[in-house]
Length: 226
Ligand code: DC
Image (tube, rainbow, N blue to C red; front, side, top):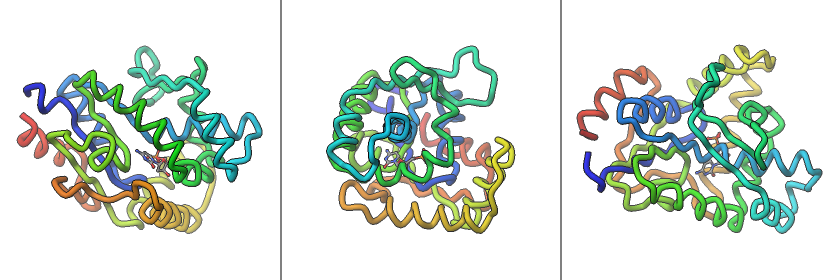
């Protein structure tokens, strides 16, 4: 791969399989994986912990501008994480998956000035090259010149089933129906928000993972990427 192809942009809705595909591609190509959703989650977690009202856009924006978020390779940790996220130096990788963060992150990520700050940090990261960036607006806003853009999707039912399974494995309980309702609610917010709504870039490859496993899909993408 030459320099022009050193950023792979992957977008798509929650639990579509985009992060798994991103991880496999990053491993095969020896690229870094940047899951940009964890940055919006880190802002949300900081707000919840510091008692900042997530409905207060100005306060959440100040917070987003004042905290330090670092994303590093998973390194020595062997607990299933894909990368490590530090919030002001503290490892919050698993705290970011808390249902309370899930419940508020769409609202936090709908604020334009919060997005501006995250996009600025993500673009700095992208300039280093050799990175697979996963999110909702990577191909459309963050890295519009990325030579390879993927939009990964799956049916809402299949995505809810995957989230339900993940939750069970992490020891959280919760019914499938509630998870399906949450998946649909977040699709609605992420897809219809005023600023950078989730949508495929015009030149993105659309990949449906409803009935296909990540290995098979990644093998196909590698043919295009190499
Ligand atoms: O991928 P995720 O579930 O960790 O994303 C968490 C939230 O952040 C989700 O509501 C969408 C939002 N998000 C975004 O708006 N832009 C991104 N680039 C990544 C995530």
